[in-house]
Image (cartoon, rainbow over all chains, first blue to last red; front, side):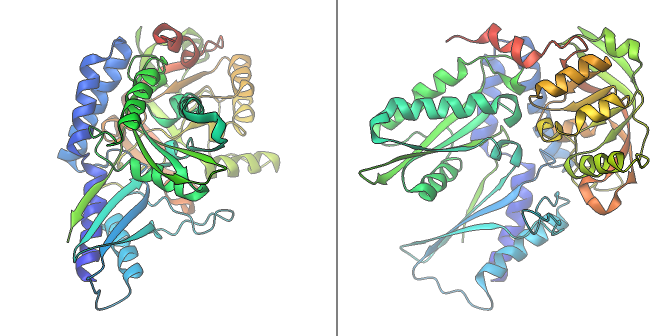
Length: 275
Length: 183
């Protein structure tokens, strides 16, 4: 359990100070290709911001998020010495207090008293074959989380319905979600499953496409369409509105077509370790 | 157009700014976000004194991460302004001259901006490490119990912002998009 706590603590700090390579490269490419002078200037600031965050150990964004943690646990693994869930929360507690990260979690959604250590985390467990544990820590900021949407479409709405849903969500998000955004989309499953698919899509490398050919095409088409919307960096006009559209799918019911659009800002934080 | 402006901001300076101007602010600003706005609003309704005088002042919608190594502040970028919309017109009518945040505002806020000759700036969202470099000092002046949401008095030097809504009601988020829209 100590090993788990220690890793989660380090991962919370790491994710909030350094972006993954794929995100850095995407921002760099966007800065080169952006057509709006103001947009280019903003993207330049974002790159400078990343450098300062890493060199001075200042979080990339002051909203260091609610800690979303995926644990993929090998079925041969046996945890000893303590409670698994408490070990995860303890890692978050230590990471956020010792790492000078902002405590942004309130105990009750209505009464809103801050828990002062950013716990609890949101934890998802998956059981996988083998004897390893894959930990993904993805601190999620709420400027973009607030702009996320779920659409319970009808089967007859089809792929055009899905496209409209994604475009609607991104346009409504506009400048509020700190563009350029990364868009995670979940299609299928049930009400809650599609939301989880969308969240998981945000943790995929943004250079990586779906291995389903028509979904890959959909990702590319939406990427083009959203970047033609004009929203641009910071919502101040430009040709870079999204850095990637990642779509995950799952079988669904004969009567339904759930679509979830989880929007993330350009600070799409996620870090993965295998122990 | 690039401008250097002193804060608190005079009515004349506020009126001279135009949507799209790139502005460097130097002087004193105050932070307040959701919880602090709610308290200020309740104080106004109860006819109590506000933690600072709104006249000519600028509010920054921001809750920083904790400061490290004797620095004045941690990461310090803007939060989404729309959550403050409900409370904003009353503050503008009390003399508030500027706001720094990110994202769209309601028609009610726009009308109050025009009515009071104020200005709405955006700082670049998600650039909190970079923006912290323009903050020279930070002091909690009210609602300490709110933690990151307490009201802070910040001394800033060349703090970079962009005018989104100017005193004539022009909104950069609406105008700029059409220049690059290819649908």
